[in-house]
Length: 358
Image (cartoon, rainbow, N blue to C red; front, side, top):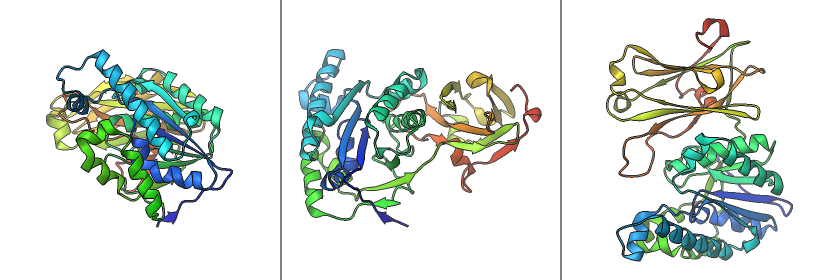
């Protein structure tokens, strides 16, 4: 069931965009709706979109692109983003550019808490009532990684804001819970704002306009990524691998576990020809000793110790490591809490004493 999305003058909308143009494609009308209601709006860009070689080759008529060229391209896209949000009614002092490396957000998430803490500080300083951010179901790796970081940052900031999820690349079946009413004038301004992203329009005008013309709709949820374990124990998540993952695609298993403000991470290579292995231990005492990872006849078994409250909170992804012809993911991030849904892979709650190596 869908319901309309409205704002009040006292509201504060904070939009997080992985790259310049995401803010307009996904939230161009949302921003205007908030501004028309008198609400404050702030737009935060995680990257400058500097690692964007094919449009740059097209626009600059060059083949080689090195660090100098990427820096120049990032500055151009930053200027385009500022022009676009100005057309949406957002003042220049309400824009923040974090300047993180384009196509590097998964690495930032894995590295340490620096990026998460920077996002926490942005949120805590501005105290939004609404945060618009990418969905975990978005197939661009930067979008999914930014969402995981933002969920962890929101938890650290103890924020109770409304979370609005948007999808640019792909489709989220839950993303139509909140829908904007049709407004031709708002949509015309959104298209005009998109035209400010000239570097992208020059090569992909039809595709970008097709995305922008889709009605803006959002999933609104308050997930914390957690699932309850057995008393004094934990859970085992069972993730069946599709045949392509078992036999020829090269992937790593990425894990991010949160326990209060403490965050632990692990990356474990998935063996080649995994479907031929009856059972194998892929990793022991991962993520600060909380996780064992097994492969059992083509199914990943992720055994996780619960926290002091008996919960397990975190995220898992099969991350493609083979060379990419296109940047988009085959598999996106999953919250541990997603596994409790009826259609999700199985969850087994087990006492800690019944599990090995944890």
